[in-house]
Image 1 (cartoon, rainbow, N blue to C red):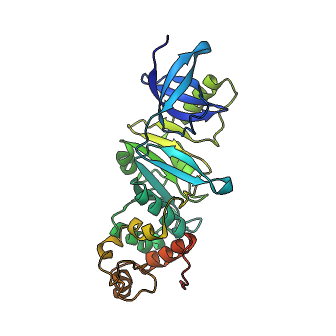
Image 2: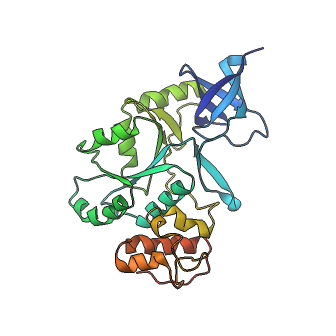
Image 3: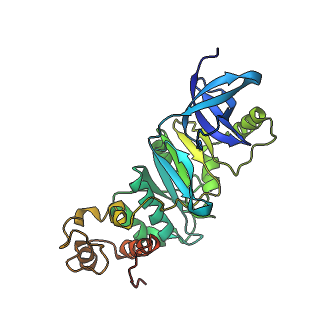
Amino acid sequence: MEEVREGRVVCHLGKGLAVEDENGHIVLCHTRRRLGDAAVGDRVRWEPCEGEQGRVLEILPRRSSLVRPAYGGRVRIVAANLDRVCVVLAPEPEPDWLLADQILAVCERRDIAALLVLNKTDLPGAPALDEALRDYESAGYGVFRISTRTGAGLDTLKQVLHTGCSMLSGQSGVGKSSLTNALLPDRNLRVGELSAHSGLGRHTTTSATLYHLPEGGELIDSPGVAVFGLAEMAPTELAQAYRDFRPYLGKCRFNDCRHVKDKGCAVREAVEAGTLASARYERYLKLLDRLGSAVEFSAG
């Protein structure tokens, strides 16, 4: 009987999984029924079987995961065992700050570190974003300014990503693919290796894939995945997911304060005093509305 081994899911290949063993070898594995959905980044127990393939027996407990909305009100796991998410922005297209705040809130809720990456800093519109980015720096988020065209700032970002497992997220057109290629100069070789093991032809770049970064660390490339859903987050939890709100939470007059129109709200008072960014607060109200709160508000 073959020995049961441990490995890491690096991508989905057809109906199977590409699992990397302890020696860095890729094995095409199938899964048992009722095992549940395995995600890229999952650690699994598997056993070899005929034809140099394997069978996944168990998905080991996850230390973290991110999900996105799926059909029928369900959610689908995007990636597992992540250490950080990089929210990529650019002067063009115009930043979707609400999307950025949503991603950051989800990461806070799931105890995953997050940072912001401003790409295309060689464009003339980049300095105009400094004021908005300072709100995030004041909240304690790292902000990295880079250009994949000129290479500016890439070495500093690589130093941060050289440990743990990271993932890029953000709106379309901000240069996530260019950044992935800059971080992974041998990415095409890895894609070819996965294709060879799958027996299914060229590995599609529309599926999430885990890569090892040359300087150390791992990167999950998940093309087309821009939004992590707010699923499993209650409206009452959103304020706690805004780390710049935390110094004021617990100081409101009422314990059940929603930080909207409640009297004696310490968060609103901080916004009015200018010690809490009004733009971040307005986006909080919009996300709160998305979470199903029956609250009326106006935000410019």
